[in-house]
Amino acid sequence: MLCFLDDGCGMSPDEAPDIIYFGTSKKRLSTLKFIGQYGNGLKSGSMRIGKDFILFTKKEETMTCLFFSQTFCEKEGLTEVVVPIPSWTTRTRKSITDDPQKFFTELSIIYKYSPFKTEAELMQQFDMIYGRCGTLLVIYNLKLLLSGEPELDVETDKEDILMAGALEEEILLYFIPEFQLSSEFECTSLEELITSPEIQDIYMVQYEKRLKRKMQSLIYETNRRRLLNEVFLGQCELKRKKTEEKLNDLRAKLALLLQKLHLVSDSVRSVCVTCVWISLLTVCCCAYPRW
Image (cartoon, rainbow, N blue to C red; front, side, top):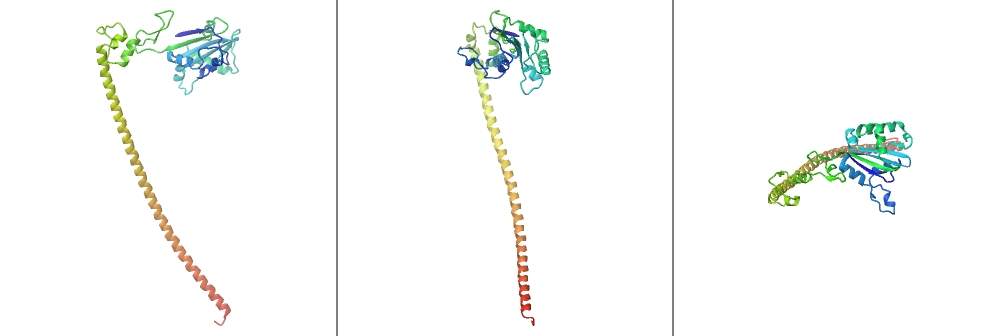
């Protein structure tokens, strides 16, 4: 767990939610050259060091707690980031909320997933901000090296945070997996170590392996694309044949329909001629009754 205490102006309950948004910062509006003008450092920096952080801040007779936890979101299966932000008054330490149920839910989440399990423990963190305003940041579930040790060394130097002593070995093991540090490679510096003939030979072997894997990957990708093209062309040919069959079927149906239409037309024509002759005979009979 790492704690960072800032004796600045702190944040009010209305200002605290702004820090969860990337790119939000009021410092760039000031004529003074403050650090942190881009609104990204707290989120990206803290999430690089650890998986979770909880922030306590005091300003203008108010106290606000902001809980940002990857562990909480992962274990609850959330698809959106949920950030509890409860607030209290400094003097009476009563909750500042219009929704008591929401306030209770936020505290329940903090008690379950943060290092502080009671409201009294939360209040103790606010008490660590000795002034009337300020901010305390607590980062926990710190990132670990492959050896299981924390990436940051806070024990060697009581006044500074150092990179872990095993970092150089971790770098070598990451880039040169076959290399194992042992007594036969005794060098005075990392530069001397990585420029030694033994390490260079290992590096060249690794380079050839990486190059070979890259070539195999390119060959595989080329064959995969060719196969996909063949499958695509086969599907297109199949669809073309089906479309052609449907078109031929429609043509046959159209020809049959035209044939039927022609027969109907002939029948109508013959009926019309018959009607004309009947009409003429009727006229003649009326004009010449003796017929």
